[in-house]
Structure formats: C-alpha cells, structure tokens
Length: 596
Ligand code: SF4
Image 1 (cartoon, rainbow, N blue to C red):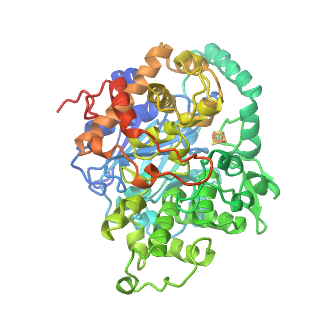
Image 2 (spheres, protein in one colour):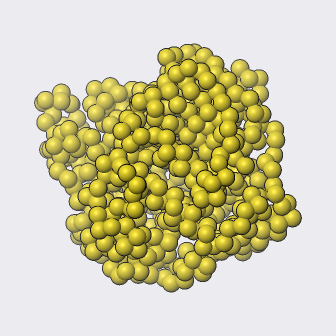
C-alpha cells in the first residue's frame, strides 16, 4: 500500500488516499505511480506555473527499508525549462523520513498567496506561514526551521532564492545540501510560494515477508562486498571521472569544444582526496559516496563529478578552491550546477565569438578574460540567482537564450530544453542516443556508456557483451533501450542508480520488491513495468507538442572534435533512431500507441 497526501495550496485543503492497486501492479510504486498520476491529471496544456500543475514528491517501496542504496525521493512537475514532464531525484534522509511519516507521495496543487511551508508528522499535515523564511538561503532556512521545531532531526526539502526568483534551473534541496537539480522543479515550487516541506516520522514501513526480505538483502550485501567498482566508488565517489574520463574524451572542456586539457588534473578526485575528507552516506547505503570536505575550517559537501566538470573544465576553471566555494554557494542559492555551468559556458562562447551585441546589452565584459576567470563567474552566479541585468535572460537557460539572441544552433547544447550534462556524447554513441531519447531531455544518470567499459553486466536482461563505444550497429539501440527500461523499473523502487549499475544481478532487487509488497514480479514483468513508465512519459510529452524533430541535441555534437579521444566520432543518431523507435514499438514518427 502506498499512501498519498494531497495538498491544495489555493484553498488549504489536505486529503489522504491510497494509490490504486492497478497502478501499483502496472507501475511498481514511487516514481512510477507519480508518472501515472501526473500524466492522468495534468493536462498537456497546463503551464509550469499554472495552478493545475502538480508538484509530486514520491518515494518507492524500497525506501526506508533494509534494502541498501534505497532512500531516494523523486520529484515531478511540468518543467519550466522544457515545458514537458520534468523530473529529478535526490538522496539523503528526507525520503526515508517521509516514508516513516506514513506517506509515499505528496501531490501539491494550486498556488498560495503568501509564502508557506508544509509540515508532515506521523500521518498528519498542515500549512504554516513562511513569510519570515522567504528570501533566505537554503542553509539558514533549515537552521531556522530546526529551531522552530526544537528538533535537529527534522528533515527539510526546500528552495533557495533561485527557486523564489523562478530561475528556470532552480533545484529543490534537502538534508542541508543534497539537490534534486534537474528540470527547474525548484522554480515550480517557488511559483506555488511553497518554501519548504518539513517531515518527521517514527513508523517503519510494513514488510509483507520479512524473512524473504532478509535473504534478498543478504544477497545484495554479498554482491556489494566483493565488487571492485563499488570499492573505487566508496573511495572517490563520482569525482574520479575527471581524472580518468579524459582518456576517452568524455569530460566536457571549454563548452564541449575540446577533449583534453591539463587543468583536469587539478580538479579531480585525486586532488580532492589530498585534502581532509570524510565519508557521508545516504540512509542505509554501504558505500557512502556523498563525501564532505574541510573548507575554511568547516565541513561542506564536496563537488560531484557533474559540478567539477560543468563549473570546472567546461569553463576552464582549474582552481579547486573556487569550485568548492561555488558548490556551497550554489547549493545555498538552490540552483542546478549542470544547467548553470552550461549556460555560463554558452554565454562565454557567444561573447568570445562576437555573437552578442555588447553595446546593445550594455555589457562591459568585452575586454574581460572569460574562460577560467573566477571573478566573472562568481558575479554571474549572483546575477542569475537574483535575475539582475543579463542574469535575467541567463536564468532562462541555454535554449531560451540562444533563441532570444539568435545564436547559431551549435551553441544550443541542450536536449528538449534541458542542458546537456557532463558526459560528451561524441565519446560514446550510446550516450548520444540516450540523451536524445530520454523523456526529460538530455539526462545522464542511466549511463549505458558503462557497457563499453565492461563494468555494466546484467545477464538476466541480456547485457553480457562489451560493445565498442563508436559502434554504429543495431546493438547500440538495443542496449540503450534495455538500460532505460530496467533503470526506470529500478527507479520506481526508489533506488540510487549506483547500486543498480554496479551490482551485476537484477533478481535480488526483484526479490526485495516482492518480499516488501507481496507481489510477484519476474525479471520480465518488472522490466515491462519500466517500459510502460517510459512510454507513459513519451506519450505525455508528445501530447505536449513534441515531435521526432525534438529527438536531438545541439549541432555542435555532430561536428567532430579535431584532437583527443573522441577520435573525430560523429554519433549516428539519424541511423539509430528508426531502429530504436522500432524496438520500442513506436511508429516512424516516434509515437507510441497513443490514445487521444
Ligand atoms: S551510492 Fe552515494 S548517492 Fe547512492 S545512496 Fe550511496 S551515498 Fe547515496
């Protein structure tokens, strides 16, 4: 059973209900249920800041249980950045606390006149005035709320000034400095005048078969223990990508125009580990990759790979101190480092190539050093978060900015409006196909590219081969589809993708799900449920007006990089897309079997 809390901010009504058995059977739980409800209840014509846009927070069946890696919460709404279904997720403890408070979903509708926050405690919920919190940063707001509740253990999901100012890539933060960054869902929360959601819970979720769950968890623990990839992940988290991935041209440099740069050595995992670092883990995670670093006498979140790349190498910044400082600052303002770094890089390239009329914009950046110039970047972070001057346009993201200033298509480094993340699509044809077909736009977490390294093996779903990253064969499309469907199924359970990727078996996860819910999934029916979730998202997006012409990323990614490890590859997207559509059972226009 998954309990839903419905909150209407326009009239203050709060109701509870249960997710339907049919939805649970078809879409597993968590994010799958959110997708079913969202696509059913939000008309494609609803705008991101309309009353009727739903902002849904969900946790899956694994969340708060003994299953390792499984505390993630998922957030969904019509995205202001892409104007289609937007989603993002975050780790930490907020999701577990929501489950302990008795809910798997919060569905928020309507708009409040004045700033407000929602509190939830053990089956009860209410709304409280947040006027004193509006305008405050993420860290201060959490401190104030903890003092108000007189309890340091409360868990808070919230927005910072960027969300309040409707920056289109504003994040929803939680547990101090964890971020659901993508798709601008923080701006949706800001448009509803909802500053925060405070949760407190003390009840463990119901488990149908505790013995079966213990056995399945034991299997996962064994697989996790003897896993060399997870051992590296334990030590360095995602950051080692900066040190190792330039060897395959995967790291973005100078707005995706180069594939090698000596500066990466100064900002990667090895450089971070030379400092004082401590391990921090999400709830019930044996890995603990969410590390903290000592910075100016304080423990702060260290920057993940995506931040090191998008705020570092892609802007040619090799000053690790500045990146650590920005990471703290951007978390406090509540913005997505991927979209932010991408937008600034696009802006720098436009200035460098004289594509922007400085006199018209009254910009005095013309003679300023741009790439690697930390002072300029620092200034841009501020003016974007507060929408001052040119920051107002940059706060709209790459797509809007390129359209408004008539910039050439190669600067439009986005997919469906979502800025391309820090894995170079020319470095692996599976990355490129995944970016152009992902329902939320250019999205990186499912990472089919790892199949090329031999680290991603799952016999039960037919991933047994190591495929050449530049292969142009049908197998590329098959593998992307398999990874997408199985990752959607896994995400509906509420898991962190690192657990799924590096543990080479699927069956123990499904045994956990069956033990918790009393249902009876097989590998086939579980993967099928993932495919159904994926198709629901696609259908909804097509009803929003997307066509196959939107299955693309900027033209920059279809001209070769002259030097480096992408080896002048051009991803064969136009050849692979018809194969991919066919494998999915979509028509030649990329449309699933759609009901009007
Ligand atoms: S692997 Fe890292 S992000 Fe995933 S659950 Fe563990 S600590 Fe959290």
